[in-house]
Image (cartoon, rainbow, N blue to C red; front, side):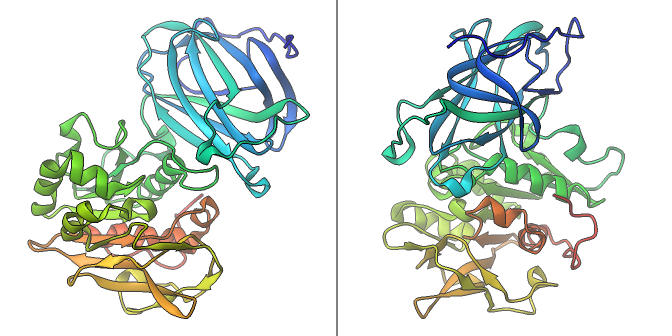
Length: 399
């Protein structure tokens, strides 16, 4: 496809890590700069690309992309060095399976680029292997995605979301995520993790950080002084029991708090037997099932600190039915599904003083943008570090 975007001169000889508008590219092919839902965006065709010249990649460790699909399908977003087919710096997919999910969102991926001034290409294409084998015809317009901006970061969190320096004796919370594994606007692991960490960092005696690596930090020093570990991720039960069980066991025996949100509660039956000792329970299909019908939250322990300021209310989420709970798990919230109560949140007081909070809620990104829902999860995390809950509504909790 021919060049359709304008060539915009770069105002700087070397650009430090930071946010760059996708529409302010230096060159492009198969891309239009248009007015989208969030100002001027780069509208991408299949195999379209745009280029940033003279980007200083020294100390860059992560890329965050704000993007919206324009149609149903699975689309790859690739970042290359030097040419559209040059060395791959990082990649992620956007799988839009419903027209209701045509909206902007963000993802963050770890990268290991060479230091110094580089030319960076962003390429989009129809994925050769669509998610869930759900194949859709190419759009008549030829356009796949709108990209609003790309943030070149030296940390999984932007500076604005990190804890302010200076205060000592903070409770330290470490978030860990995994790669994208679900359709767009669901299981938005990196975006939700960033939001939760930003919210916790507005509390003066808490410091939330995010692992720079998927699954488990390569740098073990990140665990020094950690008070809690939080997974909003893929199947954390399988991941932890199969790959990191010994190290995870040491943390749990040391009294470190643990939170697993939504799919992070999942484990196969053979791993779930062991995961239950740390998490209090687990879910798998089978024996579990899924239900997405509207339901209502019901509080089993309305006096629990995690539920402070909450009210029983309607809920639309992906419900993990028939979770397997151990004898020490204490149900906190349940929802009725086909006349049967299904536990969707529970706590565990572990031997040695450690606490675990597990909620199988959190499928849709829309729920995470709801303040009472997000405060519920934040108070679960705070409970695991023996911290008082946030009030209702939390005055400093921002989107």
